[in-house]
Length: 397
Ligand SMILES: *[C@@H]1O[C@H](CO)[C@@H](O)[C@H](O)[C@H]1NC(C)=O
Ligand SMILES: *[C@@H]1O[C@H](CO)[C@@H](O)[C@H](O)[C@H]1NC(C)=O
Ligand SMILES: *[C@@H]1O[C@H](CO)[C@@H](O)[C@H](O)[C@H]1NC(C)=O
Ligand SMILES: *[C@@H]1O[C@H](CO)[C@@H](O)[C@H](O)[C@H]1NC(C)=O
Ligand SMILES: *[C@@H]1O[C@H](CO)[C@@H](O)[C@H](O)[C@H]1NC(C)=O
Ligand SMILES: *[C@@H]1O[C@H](CO)[C@@H](O)[C@H](O)[C@H]1NC(C)=O
Ligand SMILES: *[C@@H]1O[C@H](CO)[C@@H](O)[C@H](O)[C@H]1NC(C)=O
Ligand SMILES: *[C@@H]1O[C@H](CO)[C@@H](O)[C@H](O)[C@H]1NC(C)=O
Image 1: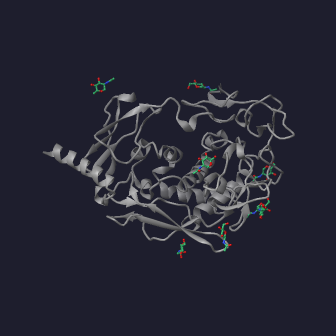
Image 2 (image 1 turned 180 degrees about the vertical axis):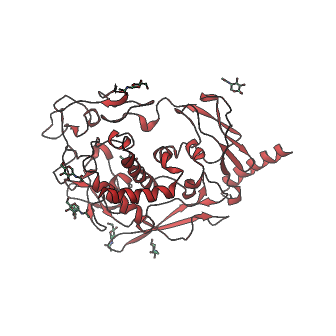
């Protein structure tokens, strides 16, 4: 009888979802349950199991395996799968830590020196094909009239740059000048010159965390207007401001409306749907967006951290997490985990209450895997992290 009910519950869930008539009470709740996979390891390990309206989850073991859950719905049970090299540990730039399953980019090779694994890269003057092969502080001088196809020094803050002349870690090429992250005030328009990193920006690239980093709000919106160079101009803005009070939704109240406003006063409404998340309750949740209203304090901390991290030897393409100068330093590590967490907030389908889920649930989920890796050590004490970051900030000055 129980089993029939369970099947019915699942079937009903999917039918309702298909008809777009899901009610919040049908959102599954997620809970951590130790011992799901018992003592199995590897691909055969059960990492998530459905039981009625509850999903139970557990981390995968070994670390390089993880639960492939595309949606927060689950039929019966899910096994861990082996993933050779996790996508964010592929093609690491020179200087980064290549411990665990990972690969270094191109000519950079993973080397162990005094028990430390590092992508050992090319030196100044060495022939190269890509920035990531050259050691931190260097880039591959390709393209343009000054091309040498050799590793050369990156431009420092306030120095000149362009698509073929890269900027140091912590800065980005804005209007041909290496500009520190967090530097541009709201209302400033700018073009960003790094097509190697950003690819082709079209009018559909409305906003992007990487581009927004140079703004004091860490948020920039595409104006649709082009510069004399033919690149789209972005404007530092207050970000998306929510037109609702609470993120949690019940029943058919699914619209999550945000407004985006340019400094010329033009305001546009953007609507997202509340969705079932990887949450511990049965509500739908609106996605979180990094508006200055809600994230003012985060932004202030991020500005302070970027401003005070000028002498860190990290590659300009480093993923922050694997830069040894950050990773090996307790305070920098905490400070940058905070930065990465708030960058995550502006992207993708993320649900506010995910942050309240148990760590093992979060770590089980592919979509949020990157997020949880970044904050994994600080997650369990989120309030503590906020306090700690404030402390670090005061310590740094
Ligand atoms: C996977 O686990 C099940 C249940 O423990 C077991 O019967 C099966 O043989 C295992 N399969 C493999 C390939 O190890
Ligand atoms: C490297 O690790 C091994 C085993 O943990 C240890 O015995 C050795 O002293 C370490 N060497 C250095 C240089 O830290
Ligand atoms: C931005 O950078 C310029 C040049 O380095 C500096 O003079 C200015 O104070 C910075 N502004 C902010 C808001 O950080
Ligand atoms: C960048 O250049 C545009 C014109 O293309 C100009 O409107 C804008 O004010 C400049 N921004 C900065 C930060 O220099
Ligand atoms: C932002 O740009 C980076 C670099 O190109 C890219 O990897 C990322 O996917 C972009 N993000 C979004 C949300 O477009
Ligand atoms: C304000 O700027 C936006 C973005 O460039 C543009 O779409 C809009 O037409 C502008 N509004 C006015 C009144 O100029
Ligand atoms: C949101 O933008 C719409 C235009 O898309 C506008 O009519 C509305 O007044 C704006 N709402 C707020 C609260 O600014
Ligand atoms: C970075 O190093 C330079 C030279 O050692 C020093 O003058 C500067 O104050 C340092 N900056 C920070 C933010 O620590």
